[in-house]
Image (cartoon, rainbow, N blue to C red; front, side):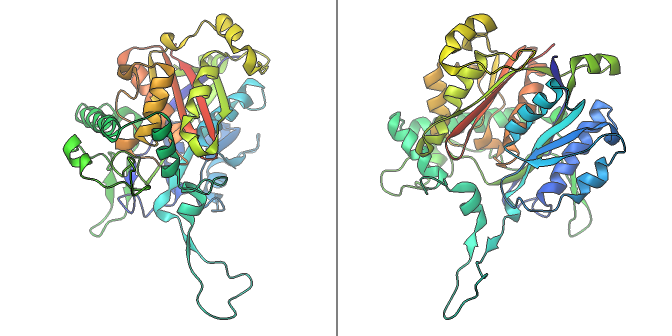
Length: 404
């Protein structure tokens, strides 16, 4: 059974404490879900399962999803996961026949991440400090106990990446995003968000994080953010702290044909791999290699990684066959390492800019890059694409799609 994506949409990406900061993550997610369903001409009652990725404040109530999707014929589940993995789980559910229509996506409000204090046992004497949950739960490696930015410094050191090389990639990312915004290339993938303002409702209909005036000179003036002496990773060549959501609708190709829906793309293959947590940014390297060389079978059998060369011959895909790559730019250092190690052509990677310019709402980014990839494939008339990102804790995930 072939699994297809029939709609893919995202909200604009807001800056930290910016235009979307008044909305909770699940409120942003609901907006993306409703628009994805509307574009696919799917009623909420037809949805079998909703799978949403989220990193921060994972205990937030999601009653609005339940109310929106309550049905008398099929159960609805709401889960939290990496939002690229949520697409994989959705595809597997359709492939296995467990679900007929699945909504997969991700949501994040990093602006609403809380400061917490452990008071379970009370304070007998003296002060008690607040802890930033955004740093503790989202941006600090649980195994190495270092900031994600420090893992990028490790990658830069391992691959001997200079500050200028990283700043050059960041400048190019900003330029590509600025060009895409000027040409209206993001309009089709975006759904506007209405937020309360001092003088009434305000409509947010474009990404607010890009900095179109960025130059190598301005980036060169920034100080290292994580390793103060000798460091090369700065705020300018790193992704941002952002808010946003993305969602897409999955169903079988047969069902799409019956409903008269033209798919944006077919889910061809996927892979998730592990790397050393201290260099988590390298995760996409083995993930892309394995995903490109493994296609989904009708029985969803897992092929052994050590046999991936044989699988490559069976699949008919190679790195050179891929038309466009959408790689999440967590940091310029890790993006450069992935491109170089896989021998990717920069002209095929993040053609409309990446997370350094657009932003990185961590729980939503896995789906965001896939949404952007699907629309970029359509705009360029290309066929084959790969979306991939690194994951804190030492993982990488990649997903291959193909337009009909």
